[in-house]
Length: 100
Image 1 (cartoon, one colour):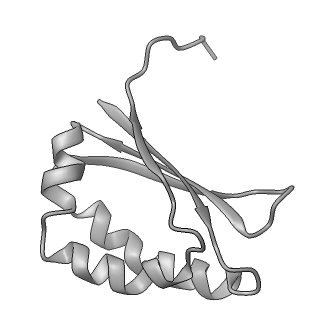
Image 2 (image 1 turned 90 degrees about the vertical axis):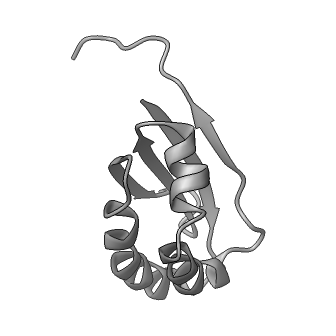
């Protein structure tokens, strides 16, 4: 399993609109093969910054599967206009987990 990580810099003043659009977009990604789970968090210190964390079964499920799907066009239409600048997306593989 891999973790997709992206800090989403939303244009200031559009946070409420972004959150509504993301709520509409979330079922799109959740329905993709290889999707595991998703978390969207808002920064306390920088209120127009959001942290998106998505677990995928593989990098390919995200890169080729989701981004190569027709549904990705709708995701892009709903969300990409909110970002300034466009976010950097990276993938991580877990190397250590501390017990709860």
